[in-house]
Image (cartoon, rainbow, N blue to C red):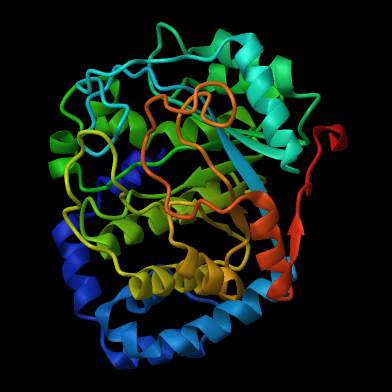
Length: 369
């Protein structure tokens, strides 16, 4: 059995009705519990929970401090390539955007790495488009070999791979794999992904199972907030997380909260997710799961990132570039999306300290294993 077997027993509309039928009583019960279920999570993300966000935030802060202390892990994304074979209506890398494509060479990778290291980062996230003919497992392994002596922790966000390929990359030095379903609304998924391998909903849905079977240390999940109803999508993501933790219990997990951002040739968001709703969602995840890592990227505004640190976040990026070579090699290459918070790592580290938290540049090293 894998997650698809469980997912197929659920209906989107039924779960939507269940979430929107939650009452203030359901929310109060969920807040009173020490251990919460997915039904409680539905209550906490429902419209009925909006008046309770301040109470949720207080509990989220307490749980996060108890489990993680007052620390925020710092990381930087490095885009290796903007080549992509998919058409995705929300992404600047989409194949139908007729713009210059770029994949970094060895020299360019090392130039980018030198800049990222100069900013203090010891955790790096390697990102590519999905172009199997150029950015494939041999390319990833070679890039990892080039840089692994420079970083304590390497994560990847690339196209879905097979279990054996994830094992190869894990053995090469990959600590974490991020794989987002984008939306769990299977009926409309094809509209957002009309062409390319990514249009195969089930193959993507089964990817975290393949990562789990590979023995990779951490799996990152998330949905693209703005495609469909964020409450329903987030319930299915929480369902996925719950299944994975029970099945691959030795693996760590993280949740990211990417909201749609402007990019070359993309559609407008189908649903607007407000800052208040994003805080509600983040706190709901913490109240559901004390152990899951929660990450906020530079997609979000300075104001939100200034104020969200005590509410349950455990990791943040800073000074990010979403185009290959964007740090030092080719500053104007095609970016995946526009970031919102452009402040550099030193500024964000000082912000974290000003909130009474410690910015953590290194909390894992492959030498430990």
